[in-house]
Image (cartoon, rainbow over all chains, first blue to last red; front, side, top):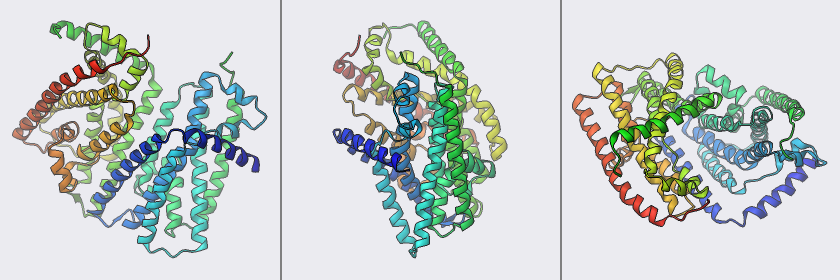
Length: 262
Length: 271
């Protein structure tokens, strides 16, 4: 269990050293994140100008959802998605052979190689939005709340990692899958709003197919005291199942990989 | 440019046919692209229907069913105003493609225009089943009169032409600098807010509506969408379409000047 973390630490250090050479990219990211935060807040404000609650969520609670959305987007965007792109590129170019010959677990290796550090700007912004929302909600801090929020956040991230990796694994069979990744990223946008407002067919998809519900709404539910122990346990089981399925498909995909280099 | 209109037409057909063939090759990719395209308005629609319901039926004169109508037409307008990404200029210059294109006896904008026009043919076909599904799922209220239906394609084509010229012109920024992402993102953020892409402009606060009146964006989303909803009078439509045409003419002239400057600034890369 410690070894993947150590590998992650190592690769993260290399990524940081690499990226700090290009400091202008930081300002570019600040501009981009600022723009998307700005438009997001404008939209929220337009909604607020007409109504106090949306799908049973108050204004401050909706802001909390938006904060989790930005935070999760930053986490996935810096830690998961760049790795998936690199992996798909490797399959296409035949460079995956070099990964497979290394004496480490290949799934771990391809999952921790890249950290897009500038995307962490979104993590900072997400936490800032969350802080404002928490202050407005007048939340009473408790250990249960902190535990529920942190654990659902981590599980949400793992679930998104699973579906993104599942989509990338398809590149073992169909080389060109980046449209699928793009599609999933646009579906993630649905997480700006509580999944409860979506019609049933869409909500099911957003829960089990592309688990936006678990990634954003459930952590926000935890923070606003809506999370029941049953739902927490259910999320835990679902996360384990998703990890197991992903692992099996990874093995299956590897067997199907024939190499494209040399 | 001293091309006769028949040879221009031949160029458009050739470039357009290429786009059609490319699109028909990647069917699975197209399906995913449709989902990508439709998920955006569906999110807006769900949110605004919920707000309308919380408000006791309507927001700024739109009922939930009318929002459904708006975003339904939105999907078709989006298909039509889809144009080349300004970023493609970055790639064209970097890969040395533009150097070759400049040597041809025709302006590169002509082949681009033909290509994107042809692109609409398969995209509209792919759109039909999606529209049918959206119709069943959201039951939109659309009440255009016959003349609205006839007038709509005019607004649609002018919207495509305007957005095509705008994005093409924006792409020319790549001739001067490589750090273009910030410029493009700012542009698209402005478009999102001021075009009616996000919500019908009536729903927006007054400052957005006032600013939108001076910007070209609403003529590529809001106006063509509204023209099919059946709420517009004939005189409103005519003055709107004329404004669209005026924007097209203005941007076209600006583009001529800009293009001259850009080509002088161009440094060829590649072989």
